[in-house]
Length: 216
Image 1 (cartoon, one colour):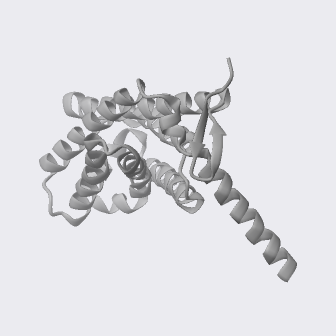
Image 2 (image 1 turned 120 degrees about the horizontal axis):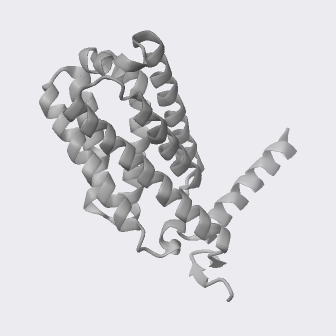
C-alpha cells in the first residue's frame, strides 16, 4: 500500500511510515506526561508533598520526547521550547540538590522564587498547548496554555492563595489528559502538518547559509 499523497502549499507531499511512528511517539509521550502530572497532583492532594519526585521522571521524559517529535514549522520556536525544557529540568535538579528529593514540593510551595528555576519547564509544556490550540482550536488546549502560567505566576507573585493555585493546576492537568486522549483518533497527517512548508523553509535556510558562506 503506497503512502498517501497530499497537496501542500508548496507542492505535493506524502505521509510516510516514519511520519506515523513519530506522530504516535509524540502522542504517547504527551500522554505519559499528562498521566504523570495528574498522578503527582493526586498524590500531593491525598498523601502529602513528600516523595513526589519519582513522578517528575516520566513527566520530564514525556515532555522532552514530545518536543523531540512535535511538528512545528518555525525552527527557532521549536528550539526555544526545547531550551525551556532543558532549563526547567536543570531547575528541578537544582531544587532537588538544595531541598532534597523528598522535600522538593514543599520547598516549591513555601518559596515561590523556585518558580524562576522550574518555570521554563512548564513554559515548554504551555508552548505545546499553544501549538495544539493554534493548529486544532481545541478549547482544552487553550486551557492548558493559559492555566499553567496563571497558576505559576500567581504563586510566584503571591497574588493567588495555595488552594487556588492547586485548583488551577488540577484543572490544567485534567484538560491536558482530555487533549491527549482526543488526539489518538485523529489521522497522523493532522499532527504532521504541511510537509511542503517544512521543505520550503529548509530550502530557504540552505540558501541563506550558502549565501552567507559565499559572502564570507
